[in-house]
Image (cartoon, rainbow, N blue to C red):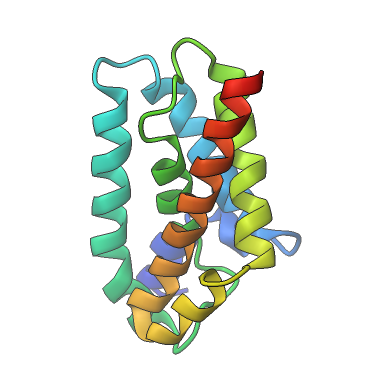
Length: 147
């Protein structure tokens, strides 16, 4: 196995069942710890940005389109959903709700998520998950108003 595949999959993307969901669960596990740190929103933002910037060339070198085993895009997207959510005050609602909302949008890919994949290359792989994160974040803002 190439080093690109090992890093891009985090090992979890090699799961024969729901590799994207498994990859996102890695983000949930990390977020459980990060949420308790001072400046967690900044950490999530920085991590999403760093994973995106480093992940785009890695995704491009790994495949011509979004391979199922490449899950860094899911982790970056999940972290992007969490930016600014009250993860300390309402951890389970935020962490689980963000997971569900993100996976729904990442899987169904309503407009313009699907269209953003046409950017192509590694950036297309990464950006569609960030657009899904914007949708999921908006849903979480609504949920938090009523929950």
